[in-house]
Image (cartoon, rainbow, N blue to C red):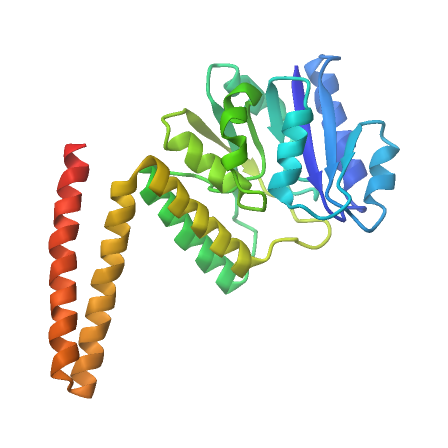
Amino acid sequence: MISIIIPVLNEENAIAETIKACQKVIYAIGDSNSEIIVVDDASNDKTNDNASQTGVTIIRHLKNEGYGKSLKDGIIASKNDTIEITDADGTYPVETIPKLLKVFKEGKDMVVGARQWKSHKEFFFKKSSRKILHSMVEYSTGKKVADVNSGMRIFSKKTVLPILSELCDTFSFTTSLTLAYMMTGKSVVYMPVEYKKRIGKTKVRPFRDSLITLKYIFKALNKYNPIKLLQLFLILMILIGLVAMGISLIWLSEIILWASVCCAIFSMIAWVFVVFLLKRK
């Protein structure tokens, strides 16, 4: 038994096809107790009408509450313990769900569809921020992460419910979920999936969503590994000290020079000490 949850916002051109594809998956699995839940985050187009014609369960928000909040409401309303989430814009190959499900049933805590980006183009800022945040997530977890915020994944309702309120209500939901699972020792498996061309416009706001993701990275570090958060802060202090040293040399300010040197040296010593503690841990 599986509950497929699809969060939507103005996806009138793709929602019906996505639901039909998911219905085919459920038919292939051969389980009449499986379900599809569409959570409409206050769409103002024909998304709700098109979804209603397919006969699936629909939860409708009266106002926009966010991608993560939509998933949370879908998870809470689900009847089954096995949860599969996917987007409604046609980017994820839902026909691969049975393969992910097979791996999940082997005893994994979460199975994620790792998107393949070979033919996918992004703006410079979005691509750069993605790489930076990816590096920070890998630093935080101490593990390789194939796809930080893939929206196609399978996990257990029982496992996620205790931490559900701590997860992000916006597009960083999947990143915060990755952090929570990996930093508490849960098994996360990545399986490569094709990432198709999007139908319709993206709802992601790169700058705002990057800041929110950064916030949840810091929250996860503070909760699960505060020493690493201190180490990150000290690295930042070293960089500030080095930049201040460069500025002082240009302006020939002796006071700023000595202050920045002391700042950099103190931060370096403290950073070495933190690294030592991390290794002992």
